[in-house]
Length: 390
Image 1 (spheres, rainbow, N blue to C red):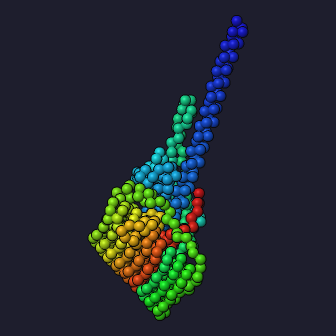
Image 2: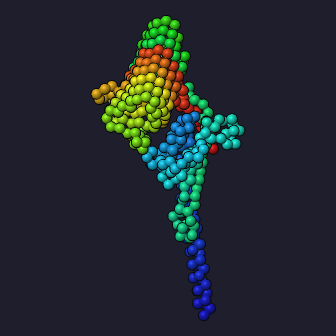
Image 3: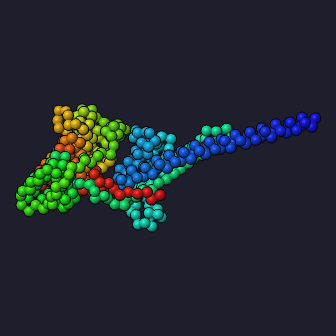
């Protein structure tokens, strides 16, 4: 009788021990799973904040870059980024299973203590509900995990060139000012009067300087690789498709007082922007064709990756040479004009370009009173000095 009682007690104890051991195993497995999720989220928020900071102080571009990079790190695309709403400087997104709040301009005690302007800071705050593999069997519900990262813009790099060409840089007009260095893998041609390059004009093969009152410091050097575009062509195509601005064949935007926004992608044709007083935060992309600006009073700021215009044809094959041409007066570009296999040609007067002009063939300034300034905020070939504050 007593032995039966003892056996019964033993079975109860064994059962309790098994339950406790299973609970410990479940806790260990779920803890490991949660730790892995948090590490991935930490990487996502850090990478997104740094990507967004590269586009500061332009808040909308910084938020877009941060959200898109968050999606990419989750194995998603820009089409998976859904805007849920806005509150003050914060835009809330749904990216996969995560809720992501991106705030810029951003200010808190840390940024204020370091004297960082709010326009130079961005915060990414992400939350995800994590359900354990086994914990729910023991009544452990899913838990919400939130992580944040703050990145700041601390300055612009001086490592880029205001103009870069694989074959030739030509400045042919009068009263043109280039602030920063230039680089040509072949020839440097400077004609006209009262033209100035404040930095060093690097060339590899030949220089020709004519005209009066031109100020330039030429220096022979070795060839340098073409500055790279941050993302693939399919990335910009996806952004345009999500924005409803993807077009097949030739596309023309014509009119006055137009406002354009987002990535505008033209697949298999030329893109022409024609008219007066056309503006917007925009990135124009063609897969094979030319990009042309005809008219007066353009004012464009790069929407993504510091690019205002990107003629992406990598080979130059097709019916036309994929140049970027500006023919008109009083055009302002805050960003890079990038011709992957063609030339960047400026024919009008009073151009203001803050960023870089990059052409695989030539960069030609044939007008007057152009002001081209390398700016790490908008110019490829250099990078913003960004860092994580938290």
